[in-house]
Amino acid sequence: MYTKRLLQMAALYLITGVLLGLGMGISENHLLAPVHAHLNLLGWASMALMALIYRAFPEAGSTMLAKVHFWLHSLGLPPLMIALTVLMLGNPAAGPVVGILSIITGIGVISFCVNILRFIR
Ligand code: HEM
Ligand code: HEM
Image 1 (spheres, rainbow, N blue to C red):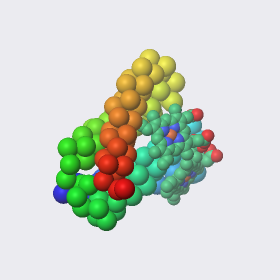
Image 2 (image 1 turned 45 degrees about the vertical axis):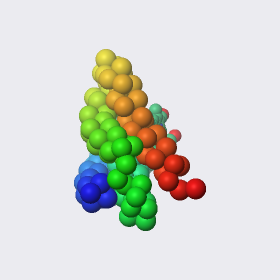
Image 3 (image 1 turned 30 degrees about the horizontal axis):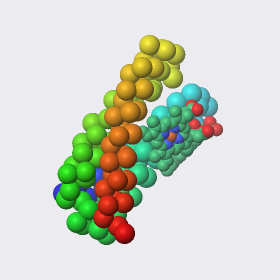
Image 4 (image 1 turned 45 degrees about the horizontal axis):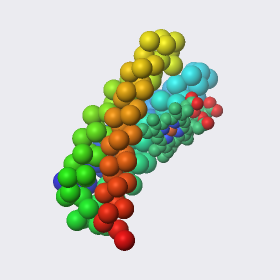
């Protein structure tokens, strides 16, 4: 179940990341490069890779840690990208929000890693 959802979200992140990249290229304004990088790498590349790993090791995709990872990554990353955009556009007040959402997303990613380390020996 998470395999399909992760891949679907990865594709949506790739569309968003590539559109932002094109926007940055056309406007010659690279201010939002960190947002672009993480939409593409934490959204597209990581989620697509995670989906393929669950495809290769299906038993790893049905654990509690897989669930924890899925929800923290899915619910943490979109608001993180929005808060990072607000921060990069010159609103330092968004800094703590970026920090908290980074920790939430980071715990999600670490849950995935622990899950994989437990299953693949
Ligand atoms: C048509 C697609 C894309 C366009 C037009 C595009 C455009 C750009 C532009 C204009 C920059 C800023 C360069 C700079 O400031 O020096 C950039 C940076 C970057 N892009 Fe893309 N990009 C695209 C796709 C991707 C993809 C698919 C990935 C990753 C899977 C990616 C990863 C990155 C990274 C990691 C950076 C550096 C960000 C940083 O240093 O903060 N890009 N891209
Ligand atoms: C929750 C997870 C993550 C957090 C909190 C995080 C945070 C950060 C921060 C604070 C920066 C420095 C930004 C700046 O100097 O403007 C950064 C840069 C970067 N991160 Fe991440 N990151 C995460 C995950 C990832 C992942 C999974 C990848 C790759 C698959 C990645 C790739 C990059 C790249 C390529 C840069 C730009 C380096 C550069 O241009 O100097 N990040 N990240």
